[in-house]
Image 1 (cartoon, rainbow, N blue to C red):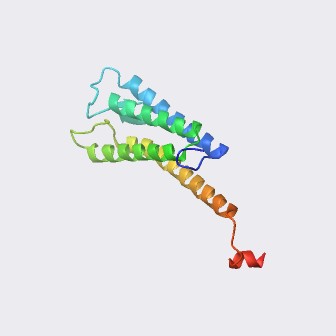
Image 2: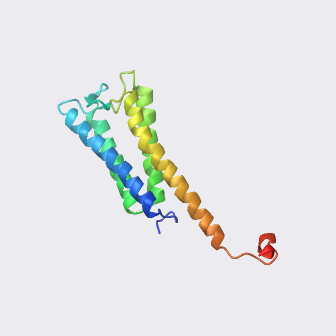
Image 3: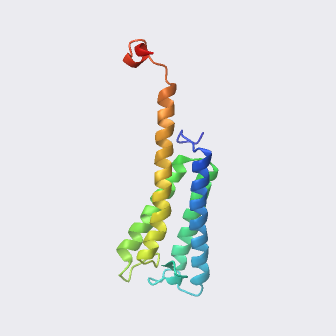
Length: 153
């Protein structure tokens, strides 16, 4: 069991790891394409046809991808929620700084989509898994004899 109590099923674990790997690969591509650029350049380098990232944005993506992989590997819903918070922070930072001189991740609207996709995906998986574990726990609780559902059985 994870420190938060609930753990992930095998299919959820695999899906979370895949989202983490894709984010990690996007961050690595960002490092390659932004080589030679200032670490916090407001206008990030174009990463193929996918998005824009500066080196800081690339390293943040690598970190979030790694955290998401660890969450899946350890089957930790709590770590998955921490990763979702990180993705949300990236979305807010890029959205607020996209057309300004202060853009810490060097991103554009496509970068918002790059972080929004795995963030929403991991959030949906973690919420579904948490709801399933709570439903299972409720089914396992002993019922009292004055419980109307127990009397129908």
